[in-house]
Length: 539
Image (cartoon, rainbow, N blue to C red; front, side, top):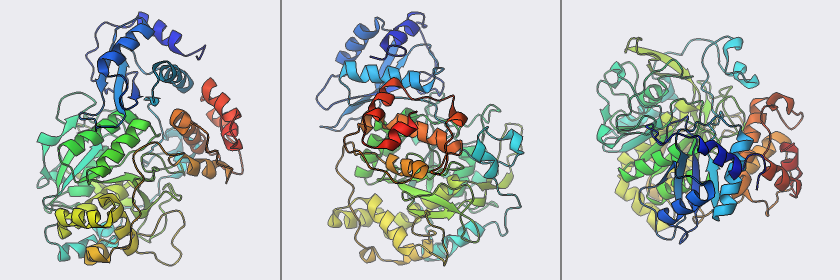
């Protein structure tokens, strides 16, 4: 048991906690954990009773994270004490999680950290950056190129429209993000708000409040326009006739919590989404990966942004099952802020991509601007996925995947990689090349090369963290006995903190992230690992 920050500390906090809490369970500031019980283990009532006994309090909420658990699958619950905010340092949260996991016999217990792994670059002076070393170098100075369809032209989307005039009609694209706001670029966009959800504020309407406290207000409006802005405005989405389902699961793209994102994925699948576009990122968690695998099993295509201004690929993009999208510019060169590495599957325009822009309630609702970030590369690619499904017919795509014994996700990934443009001198670490919608739609389903099937459900070693360690320290001796399920999220959090502080294989940056330290549990586990990089990270 963690002596400083384990269950005794949580009991003390809960002694003086409120007896009521009117906030949404997934409010970004709430203290919250995802508890995963083995298949056939404690049901909700039994788990609640054990928590009451351990904590000497019933002042908490305990609800299933997923609405319909799959038979034979571990069951994940969201646990949140009443009236407590997430104000503890990361090592304290991981210490509490370690005690809960051990005492309750859980597969995993992952705290929502409010991880600051994903930065959406904005034009500003270096003194006004997010306060991390790399952020100041991410924004490319200059004006957004003309014509305003340049990103679509580069990705051969406008050419693909001529082949498939449906332009994504009938395909549902879910968008977990900050929500959307009123904008003229959405005048003829097809929304289905009956399928939407607001996990941040509660209710169903995914309205972005455009609060000045947000680091990037209007983020969901911008990415949504890149997916499905209609044909009447100045900005065109890559799938202008697709149906967009915004899900408000984050209040700030800079602050990532795994449980609400996992909940958003689960909701998207339940309401019939065909594509899920995630222009966000943070650290891994068992529940997040569980949601992704469940969605893939239901024939959904999921894409995620590789990351911005941090170098290494963040999660969920870093998961092997995910489609990770890197960022390029009009010259097919790397957008300077794009994350890169072996996890990136392909890239798309990310530098000065025209989008709807509205960053405050007082701002006009007719502005557009050139956005930068893998958020926009992902949104554009999600629209291309909708074009592909609409062009071939989703039923035929699923039938082809079934014949091959692979997922629709794997089939789409392979098809994009097979048809991507890879100009001479294309940067390494950005995948197979730049997505080419025209070639993608022109290729018959039978022409897609063999796709590797995803592994069976269950935890896998590292889950992309090995790539992060290599990014920071260079190649090492992987330890197959290290408990990645228990310690992976904390390892990832420290790795991202180091990467954002500028640490690389040729230097260290412990002092730059001195405000973060490893929990006692991780320190002990890393010291006993055969992978020396873990002990170096946990210093």
